[in-house]
Length: 414
Image (cartoon, rainbow, N blue to C red):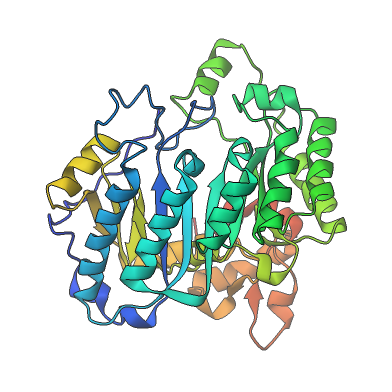
């Protein structure tokens, strides 16, 4: 089941933000995340805030599939009111529709939600607009509708090219549909990203290479590869606990990451964040980059998280409660926190060091700068951080990417 929400202070019923958070909001980047919480089935490894239709109860209760776009538009109305309280608001630079399976909604409803962003905030001329999708749900008509409605990217949940690995993950899509979905998206003029998972129980190194080779053959614009995390409360965690499936050896994920970087690098993909590779600089996911930079974003949907000007908040999780609050004219926010300067610094280090552009040495506190020499000596940080006088930055080596948590702890003095 979905993981629990964090603790926090109450969100005002009108969703209002402190004046400090809204100061200079017009000068900052703004992204919109639209969460679609529906899936046909729950994958055994997933603890995202998603629900099958049977879990939601009777049709028409709460935020159902047919009414969801209208419910999301109601939260966009709230977002506009809250942000305009600070004066002028910026045009949105990125929109990301995630889930769940966003394409369980009609393509026209996804376009209506993007139109809602455009009408309330405006979209920057070069705005990036992405939707995630199950490969089985993409048809030529769906791809054309999305492109005509302003989408620029589609992120396909491929996960693996190997049927037995997909079965372990409870992924139901036909592997052959990945190739078809990529072709339909390209014909419509959309950029394509493919998502992979490595470290699944029973996945051999040969299986992983097969998936990477299949990705390279499809020449997507962007590739994400994430190590499987077995979350407590999931079906997969129960299977591991009972010994039904065996987790790979401790060094399995590190080896598979090294293979991914080698195969993708040889095919012309450059890493720009630990788990992400792009065929070109302009193929990077700018929406995700905004998270890593600590920009402003408003998350729409049940369980969605937002951040504006050092204030982070999250919505109630269940679609019925979410729709009910908006129907009553109150914020769906369940809790929030005002980040301290120390928390914001920690996040700057935690996220910034993951990027190929690195972390400016001058952004580090004295203890962090002192730690850099040792990190270089241990082969975790590129030596250029010590020798370049202009714009010196902390950039991870391949070994550093594998041990990024260790690097962060040492930079923060833990």
